Length: 178
Image (cartoon, one colour):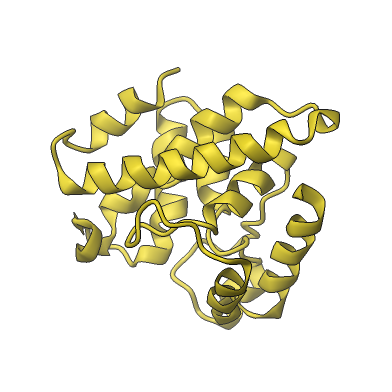
């Protein structure tokens, strides 16, 4: 599969939204593959990591995020599960799980319900090592400051809005993937 074929199905290749998404996704894929290659003992699926990292944010165009040229109706936090729906419709259920589970450091059903988030009421936590690596790598890059890798401190500060369990998951990944 060629991730760009899917991206260009939903994004005009000459649009700002595509440019931002593609650049961000390349950074995430590069970081995720770098981490994966440091851990041959984990027997990771490198081709899947690259594909899924390139597609993890495919649903952002359905969200209202004008700063990244996305003019949909959904709240930004919905981009993961909306992207998962797209990936399932494309016939890639494993890639869909990455889309759905990468927001924050994953989100539990309890967090969704307690915070009254506009998300389906089920756990959206990265489970496979590949999902965890992509979610972890994604935290290092934003779509508004392309190409600039965030520090660990800045990532943890940003995760604070999701609560201590998110920071704990990220810290666990930090120890696992270094």
